[in-house]
Amino acid sequence: MCRQSATVCLIKSPTGQHRAIGPLHQRLLTLADPRHRRGKRHPFVSVLLVACSAVLTGARSFAAIGQWASRAPQETLARLGARTVTVFTVRIAPSTATIRRVLNAACPGGLADLLGHDPAGADTLAVDGKSARGSRHGEIPAAHLLAAVTGAGLTVTQLRVPRKTNEITCFEALLAPYDLAGVTVTADALHCQRDHARFLVEEKKAHYAFTVNHNQKNLHRQLAAPPWEKASAKFYDRTTAHGRLETRVVQALTITDLDIDFPHAVQVAKIVRHRTHRKTGRRSRETVYIITDLTSREASPQRLAKIIRSQWAIENRLHFVRDTTFAEDASQVRTGHGPDNIPTLRSFAINTLRAAGHTNIAASLREVSYDSFRRPQDLIGLT
Image (cartoon, rainbow, N blue to C red):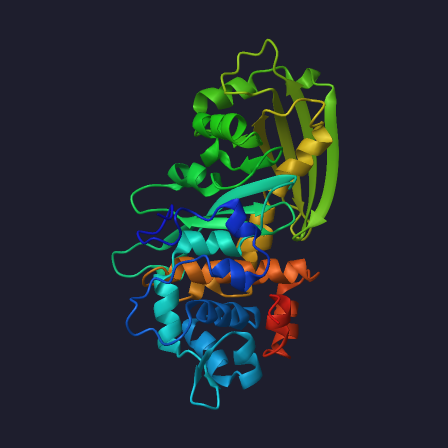
């Protein structure tokens, strides 16, 4: 059973062997077709490839994907493995209704894993959640998706957080299938949990760098107590972005005689951010504490600053892009697994474009749309 879907997508969640299969269409073959065996007219993988290709041209909805498919020429449909009819082997594109049914039924956990990036060997991995606001329907709350993104901005996978629970319960399930040896996992204060630290260090052989906030009152008090004014390991950094000047001071202390109770903790850091808005001149100050199992040799204050900034990658390079470029919060996809699978396709498009060397996702989608029936198939490796 899949770790998220009630249907059988694979014998179990996609393994490293499944994810390592080369071409995309071969990886998708390992995903079970959720449709009843009677009435199947279009190949399951072909429908998924149509959706992947359409989203790479900027399609934002089932209707847009269906419209792209209906305009696709025979050569493109042949590359996508579309259904053939008559003795003349005419290719027929799946309709909007067929695309909607398939994406609403396809296993979301399996699809996210198979379309994601392998994090093995990555320096950092950020974990954070986001709600698809437009997916709220009546009394059904909006889908909340927990995602993992590498420091390079490549999405690894995502899971939908079940109703009546929160991200904490999905943290281990999200990362369990992956080889994270040597990877530093970052997360916000919500995931600063002792069980998460043990899971990463003891089971995954990974590292952690968690933000500590007032939701962990005792731990926050313990981190604020040390004599930070005597810390000799410091790093200063200054950046200008988003209309403000920000100066950061990072101090680090190794835990020796400090009475800090957290599994495998070796080092703590204090980050003081000074912000000045360039237009208004308004100033603000923020203090943040970090706890990690990385030693001072593995992570100097300068490296800790880089690790902490990598947590922003999931906001700046995934959530922000899906909101602004794909208008995700305005999406009206609400039924079945659609609220899970459509964002997965958007993340796959972002990964594919970044792997091809593009940095501006909005500009690259426009570029692909100029050759919308050839360029997407080239990007995803279809012959």
